[in-house]
Length: 280
Image (cartoon, rainbow, N blue to C red):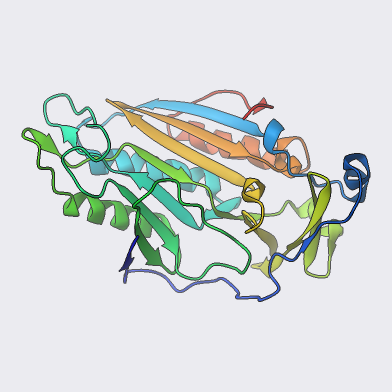
């Protein structure tokens, strides 16, 4: 993997805590673990929001389509989560119809990732694709993500005739999530006990801007990330999947925040389907 330093970044708000993400694995049954805490990570019964948008701009304008996608991410995350990494697939596209070429065809580096330079301890970023070019930044906001996408597109070299730079998918699988206010009572010190499988994770809690935040996924359990977002592009249209793995937001006190995020997405013109519980 190649490292690229992105200089146009804001100063990080992350706290480096060497004790971040301390994991407990008590010898208890699944039922007993559920009794320990009301907060549970449910990767096999996660909740989803699906949405689609017929892009109003020129379907061949890759940066304009990327701006629509990033605005959707910003709308979903407002007051709810902040991305710590974004993965992107950037295949070359046919000039005439705007269709993506098979990954790697006509170019050497179709996979890129933008990530924060300093992760909280015990938080992992998974590599989705092999041979990914990594760019590091202090904080991922709208301007930084769009600047990164513009830079990747500008640096693409498409060797096949009648092709041009483009992107096909953006994926967020590492986030910092704001806990619902009702969860504050369950925080002991700077930790929140979260049931996972047959054990319990003592999730460190960051206090920032009068709110409580957790980050994931945990380095030992990738299926602990609070939220995931995938936006894929077809000719002239965008598809979005927004998922949560924590009971707090599936059917707990944070579920109204998911409904509010869906309304914000709908206000941008997306066709948002009702929240679905269960399934991968």
